[in-house]
Length: 356
Image 1 (cartoon, helix red, strand yellow):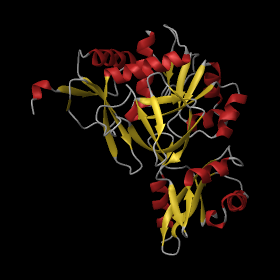
Image 2 (cartoon, rainbow, N blue to C red):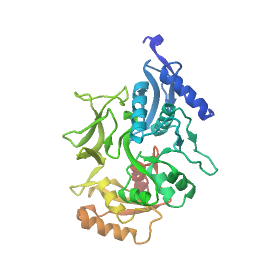
Image 3 (cartoon, one colour):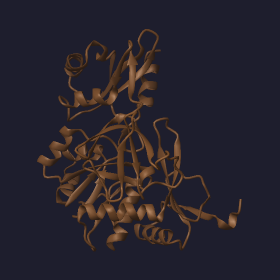
Image 4 (tube, rainbow, N blue to C red):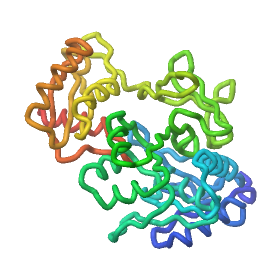
């Protein structure tokens, strides 16, 4: 390897101020300084065109590193700001940890607007007013269920991007009724974060559905180290469909289990439950079973006494007897993978242990 042609990776230092991070990011984007590593990055050198490395935790729990060029990051930031009609001098707040691509996006969008984001991670005072922010559904849920400080902050913003995990229509409606201007986003580290807003691909992004039903994405926002198909599309692990040109995400392609010979979509199960219990945290998952192949289980947090019986009834009514959960688990909190995404593997491990 010709190490002279490589670029050094400098991991983000937790002691850096937001101003220091922004200055280092600006240098990384113009090639005047090392590439920056966000998250549990282990690489020490990258190709010269790589501006940052980010890590993402997949469904297996393993970290993956993705190389993003300055052109991909800037294409994403410019398209986002254009969609929002954001103007030079307007501000973003940072409510997500810098281990997340959505937080990196806030930094790059702020650079494009000539401002420094207001870092509210760990901030104890009253949140100031900003023009834009980005959060995950769990944070939106918290804002609507007791975190009044966060709710006031979200209500004051021109737009609140919500992504990183599925946002139920019920929670979105509740937020809208509360005066929060929600924009749902879809994307991942591989696509420089959110690249589809309210079902509409950002400028330069193309979205198609493969014959398998999986979502495919192309455009200038893609990471460098991806395996693309013959048409230069990145094939995601998510199922979707296009309705009048807008993307509807149906859930992960691997979220379908087979119980008693019947296919069951965990995402559809969760969607059905949310219609009656939108204000509660819960998750559908499966464990291996000699009798059923896979058993459907439901984990929930602080749900009412009637939760299990009502859920059984509505799932059987909607999907048939195969969708009747075999067991319910009441937890103090749901294990998360990354931020805002429920760790179904961890739930399965907990359930398996509790049976022995």
